[in-house]
Length: 494
Image 1 (cartoon, rainbow, N blue to C red):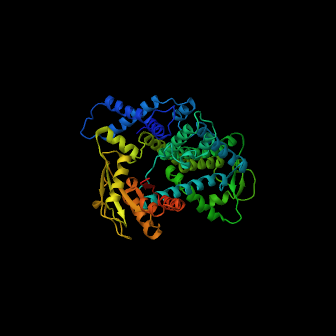
Image 2 (image 1 turned 90 degrees about the vertical axis):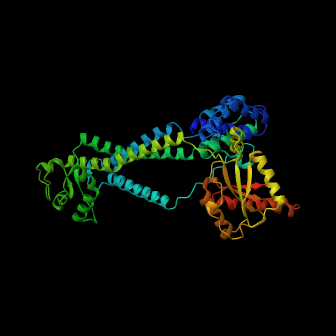
């Protein structure tokens, strides 16, 4: 789904979940808009609407809801220009990297071509280490790939959590700006921004990686710019000096570092005599026949030779790979911006999916360490009907014994887009890392983004009717415990 459509849907979600406000359409008006959208779209082409039809329905309905809202201009500006990377950031990255690279060489080796130049070799070594780290991270991700935790859109009428500003300095700055219409609209815009930052996280991450790669390439370009511009008006002194390295060791280091350049150009490795001839500082005049102590270089263009060698090295090791990685991340960011994903298993979207084509979501509830009697079943049925609509279908799976492992994936449904697997735990139990922690981790690995954890609150609340503080403490304990496992707790009944 394209980013523009996602922003519309997220704003419509914030409008519908916000507290009643004269600037916002009522629940009845939103229901009427749903019917208007269904009438405008006509009968689905298939007996069950497909994913593309559902996305089109969500987008059209969201635009109608936004049109029916009397939102202030400040809020509409936030919607039209969703939080993200500021326009000046790419230019700042490019100019900053170029200046840093230029100054690194300019200040360290202004009139010399040091064979062991820290400013040039440092850029190469730093980039090689970055490549190795990227390779290690990629291999680690392949070996320990786990499904991403389910994203949960925040309600604009929620508690303190929904009133927190979006992550980052821009969200904190915007949180200080006045929003006309009171705290209701303020919560709406903050919930919208937080949900947008959550849904667009992968796209934003790819954009940052793209500009970081471009910045690394431009740092090398800046160093080469200093190297070449200085050589236009100065005769470079060429050589090396070291307290700890011998000529043989320097020969090994340079042949290893410049191996890619020699492989591309077909040049041979440097001999020990060539390296020894450059020990100390040798000027162009010395290379042309001036009397200087020590061995003389054979190549009269020794300065230009090493400038070209370092240009090839930075071009092959830094500039070309970094620009290729930047191109990959740019293509990836564009693809992600056109294929954003919404948490369609949430009740908000499940109700709309049912409205679209009479689709009924199937919830497969797996109780853990307690039985579902008639009273509990009725409570679940009422909760599901209120949250997912009357068409939702409840399937109670066999209860798991205390300490038992999750059943195989084949024995628990919830594999289709119209079904969801739910792990139901009694809040009366005290969370244990060895038991419940392993259970939650297994659920996250098994079901991924379709996983849901429900906490049954009725039993514990009835036993502690005179101690509301104890009930709240138990809720907080379980909420933090489930969040630590990368999942989100849902209280049933609320």
